[in-house]
Image 1 (cartoon, rainbow, N blue to C red):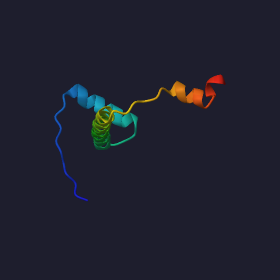
Image 2: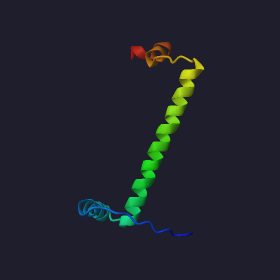
Image 3: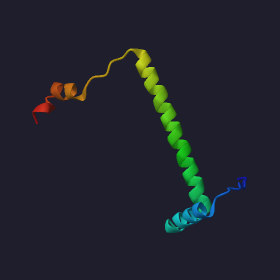
Length: 79
């Protein structure tokens, strides 16, 4: 594994907040920052994939069925 060192400029308030959060969760500051950045990337990737899938759905011409119709079909609306 190759380690890469990245420098991050923060104002004093942000640095104190980051350190406090990492300490509160008993983790090194570098782990907190790494996890936060990875989570942000994963969230944005998920949004992009979802948006693309939704566009494909809209372009397919398929129509969705309301869940209430399935409940009626399975007679679950009478429970």
